[in-house]
Amino acid sequence: MKLTDFVWLFSGVVLNTGAQMSLKTATRVTGPIGTTGASWSVATTSLTQAPCFWLALCAYGLSVLVWVIGLSRVPVSQAYPILSLGYVLTAALAWPLLGEMVPLQRFAGILVIVLGVWIVVRT
Image (cartoon, rainbow, N blue to C red; front, side):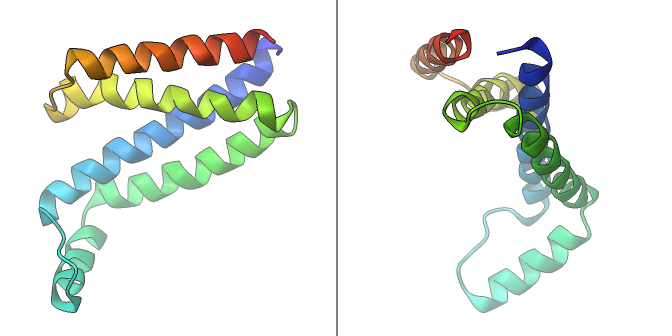
């Protein structure tokens, strides 16, 4: 895989990770969202007023565009595993940005994912 191809794909992953962080930040306003109609109504109102929610939607949209550019350049069987790097970025950012604890066992699993992606990218 060429470096420029990887950069396109990885940019999509980074944008997707940013969207996840923004969505989680936006849900701090709502708290846990229930499954009743009233709960959905209150949550929808709260979310649509949260700038992080709109930032997340924009990041998702842009990530799709960037991903399609990258996907047009490499086989999907080589590109798709790169999405797994989103697990790494999300866990790495969840701790300092959201205060989430990431146990050692989870980090070990993430390292396995990184090794797998490295093997796929090298083929």
